[in-house]
Image 1 (cartoon, rainbow, N blue to C red):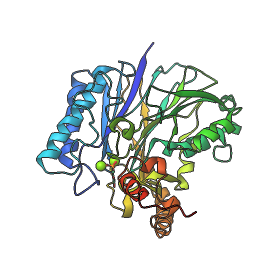
Image 2 (image 1 turned 30 degrees about the vertical axis):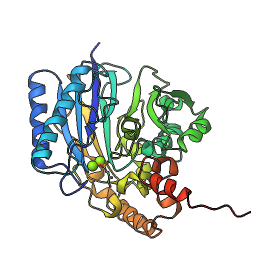
Image 3 (image 1 turned 180 degrees about the horizontal axis):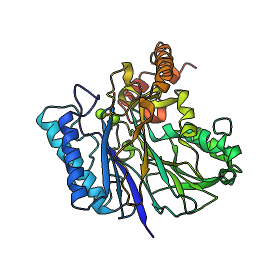
Image 4 (image 1 turned 135 degrees about the vertical axis):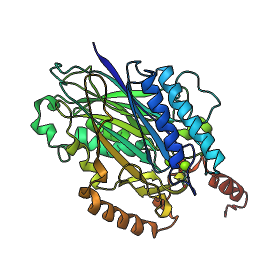
Length: 377
Ligand code: 13P
Ligand code: MG
Ligand code: MG
């Protein structure tokens, strides 16, 4: 069996002039470490991109999920980019590296991790070709994938493949994680389409519940989706930056097609994030390697489409999906949506929920005001 693992590990370790983008020098350092890791056969192939201030490293290897060598390698890349950020006085140097040294996996140490493993075989009847997408988002939380992935895997209004492809008609298994649980990984598995209203009831609250993975029911061993569904404020105990989640989605054949998977991103759905991670803002699809420069840090999402050969190579050529002219009108519309929404300032739903704000300084202001309240009898 030719098992390949795909790992996407990302972190914000410093950016120019605020939370905008990592410096070219930081990216060069990461890229040269990737080249060395390929040479040393730590990984098969790898690619570094940035979305806003987050560096994402996409890697293929044969070491399995949660492999300490892979996680340590990504951590080391982030450490050297951090030193460069410190040296050049960049903002938030080492921001997402929340422990001094991670034990094995970097999960729970700050960086976001999405991983999945599959058999890569050109003769495999389900997956003779391997096409996959890597989403990288900035200025938002892991629940940002709830709306689009529910639409793609549960709703034929947004994914005609659910009606047209008999292999997709068998449905999917959603693993949904309770991100508020600090004692361990609290999750639930629900089958679509039968339980799609139960799935919806949970995904309605993207601050607490996020899709962690989706599996095929036609070929149950096949994992289709992996999302980095962890919350930085649960690790740090306070607001240190937004989670800025990454996701892998395998596409085509027995899975949704890329053109179906991107359809929900035309909406510019509202997500928790934006400035200080404390607002509700629409999510804008952008080209890979786009800095954040908009008012209130309009949340961004980039998308890269890859094909992988039987040896696990994928980075020779790839498609910058949202960088295409097809998304220009969407961007314009979302910018207008954001501008209209921002006119409401701080009142009510334009700011994040109180559960989210409880990790920010507003808690102290409200606690101080408590003492000045009077009850009129
Ligand atoms: P990042 O999580 O992308 O660093 O953004 C944090 C922030 O507070 C932006 O205003
Ligand atoms: Mg930042
Ligand atoms: Mg970020």
